[in-house]
Structure formats: structure tokens, C-alpha cells
Image (cartoon, rainbow, N blue to C red; front, side, top):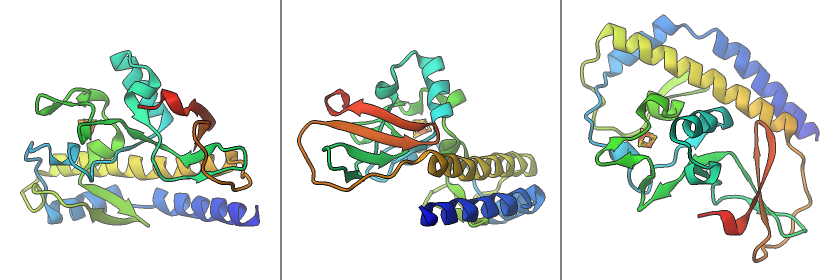
Length: 204
Ligand code: SF4
């Protein structure tokens, strides 16, 4: 429990530091790196495509598409079993079909206006306040100032949200006694809203 409290305290410090990041400096760093989306769709397909999505983002997608929660997202496969045979895992990922995001259709994003923060800011992310990027063929291409400003704004908003979501997750997290893997049973997803219980046979 002390460990959990330490982690929450650490995240609160990160949040304070994140609020001090200059959007202007960030935009300048993005311009220096350069980026222009090549519309190749590579970030939406393949083994590496794994989009973490927060509850409020899932609801926005549901509102736009009318989809049931489990038709839009799935729990990640990494997790631990408790003594009752329930599988515990953290956060949600956009559902995949045929090795691609289930919303990648006819060579484009079918939920573009409500796509998650991670997609809006790809290939960039912030790690301990440092600008980082994933592999992308659009990197190094010229980006206009206004676009860099918009990207920096979205990136900062994403970073603050990620830290806040992690704080809320840990504040609501209830630890459990570890057990062995069992057939069937429930999957318990811990997120910023607490615990979501999902019957394993309802998962795709
Ligand atoms: S939500 Fe849209 S942009 Fe994000 S991975 Fe899926 S298809 Fe690509």
C-alpha cells in the first residue's frame, strides 16, 4: 500500500512538472524534428498497432458509432490471476480485427473526428516531459508553424490526461491475492473509473 501511495505521490509531482512545460518550446521541438502524415495507414495496422484508450474516449467513440463497449475496445492480454480465477488487467485498447485497428476501414480512419488522443498525436509522445517519437515515415518532413502549435497543444493535453488517468487508476485500485490461471471466469479491468468486470466469453 505504501508503494501505491509513493507512486501516486510521484505521479502528482509529474503532473505539476507537466503543467510547467512550454507549449511554444514543444512546438519548436516538433518543427525541428519535422512531420507530415503520409496517409500510409501503417500506424493503424500491424502487430505494433496497440492504441490505449481511456473511458471518456471510449464513450465518445460509442456516441459517434452506437457500438457496444466491447465492440470498440478490449482488455490487453497482459495481466495476473487472482485466487478466485479472475484475470486482472489495466486499461483498454482499441479492438483489432485482422491485425489492424477495427476502425481502419477502406484505407482510412472511420472515426477520425473522435479518434483517441494517441492517434491524434502520433508519432509523438512525451516521456518524463521529453519529446519522443515512434517510427513513422512522415518524420523529418516540413511542418508549418500552425500545425506544430496544434500538435504541441494536443500532445500536452494528452500527457496531462495520461498522468491524471494513472493517478485516478491507482487511487481506485484494489489489490488482490495472486492465484493460478483458470478456464472461464471474469476479466477485471482496472482503469481510472475503478473496476470493470467482463465475462471472458463476451470478449472477442
Ligand atoms: S482509431 Fe483511427 S487513427 Fe487510430 S489506429 Fe484506429 S484507424 Fe488508426
